[in-house]
Amino acid sequence: MKRILVLAALLLSSLGLLAQEIRSIDIDVYINEEGDAYIQQRWDVTVVRGTEWYIPIENLNGSEVLGLSVEEDGVEFADDGRHWDSSRSLSEKAGRCGIIDKGKNGVELCWGQGSLGDHKWTAGFVVTGLVQSLKDYDAFNFMFVNTDLIANPQHASICFHRLDDKPFTEEETRFWVFGCEGESELREDGTIFFETDRSFRNGGSLIVMMRFEKGIFNSQNVKNINFSKMQKKAFKGSDYKKKPKLSFDDLVAYVAGGLFILVALLAILLVIYLIIRDIILKITGRVWKPEVFGTAKPDGWNREAPFKGSIPVATWLMKDGSRLTFAGDHPERRMGAYFLKWIADGTLTPVKAEDGHFDLAFPAEEPDFSDDCEKQLYKKALAASGENRILENGEFKAWANKHSSALVNWPKSVEKEGKAQLSKYTGDKVSESRKLLQFKNFLSEFTLARDREVPEVGLWGQYLVFAQLFGIADKVSKGLSKLYPDQFAEFSRSHGMEPQIMTSVLHSWTVDAGNAYKTAYDRHLESQAASSSRSSSGFGGHSSFGGGGGFSGGGHGGGSR
Image 1: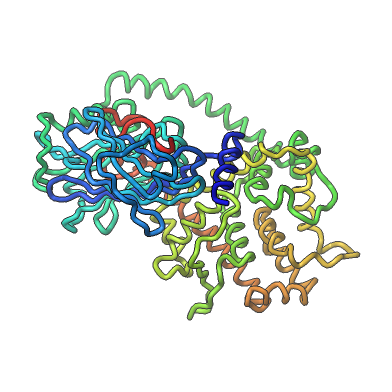
Image 2 (image 1 turned 120 degrees about the horizontal axis):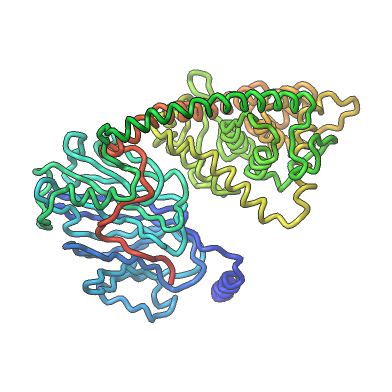
């Protein structure tokens, strides 16, 4: 049977029906007093071909790579040392790891994939002399995630620790990140952390440059240069820039900028026109694009969400299909919709707290997700819940305040996912899309119908989720409980709550989710202005996709082969 499954996976892969995926790479770097580093990588991937996973590390620049170890599901792989044989079969490599020494061209870290499909590997190795001793500072500029991996990573994070348990401090340390998009910070516990807030672009990588005051490390990897030379190479082509001096050309530019005031006045007139246009469209109700929905004002009812109840597709259609210039995007509704979905399908369990508020308990095992953006939000909410895995009142908002960039960019991933799902739909897109607005009509108007059929209780969870997306969650919840009290009681008790409690829980957690997003958004706006100068100075903040030149380690390629 195992051979049949492998053959089937190979066939599906050859037909393009299975996709190679790197869902996440989470890295911890532990640096000792000599500047050597133990690097631990956690890979979450789907492999569809090949017999081994390999990671090239080139351009070692005075460093060495030693002692690869790999484990999966708590089972440690057998170590072949520096004698890895790539010519072996899938089964022969299974449960084994090793290094290919390529001399001046560095090394390749290798381990057997064992089988096609999903894998979560933890790999660890040592890089000696990661920290280089320069004339004026100690520093490194190292590529930790290669460019041109077999698939673009969807997420990555890296955390730097000192093995002597001393903290990194602002007085002694500066840090910059290149090759991908996200945000870095010096944490309260003295570790330095970076996390991406979107998938890697083509050609993306993860390069970190750090600078330390002399006396922290005693590195034997000596380079006869000043840090400014390393920094100049890394900053070339990056968003990090030193503060420019005011020149005559700058003054001329400022004066010339005044000419744009005229253009701004014209822009204001245009905005006024567009606002009036939006008002007219709303009054007439013709706010939708006919090319998307088949009509500007769909009528009729539909009692179920189209596209198999996909939240991302509905989100994309509501945004892409609107004729309004100032439609008033509500990204917080998407967040609340997923929270309602988790409560309705039993993924999260409401737990009454001492203050009467209902907290949300996370399950021990990670559930299945309908899409990647749902998984991203779930992980953020789980991180906010802390060690007890119970998301308490205000915890998500507090977490959002500290991780504003990661959360404020999440709604865009829902749109991206919806657009991608819709592009794969092979049926009549316009007809199916129109059902979304007809479903909105149904949820808005069913309380007004004279001859009402009792809505199927099994769909009430979906009703509440989509009502949240449409901005009418409270109206629908109250309408269901008032018109169909017996059925609403049945629905509520199936979730272990009385009807009044159910209504309160649904409302409070959509509000909490919305407040978390608004907190993240406000915090993001506050930090944006200061972020550029702060990150350029090496105190953390936004990373730069460009730049990073002159790096050590890393290289091109890696993944299944």
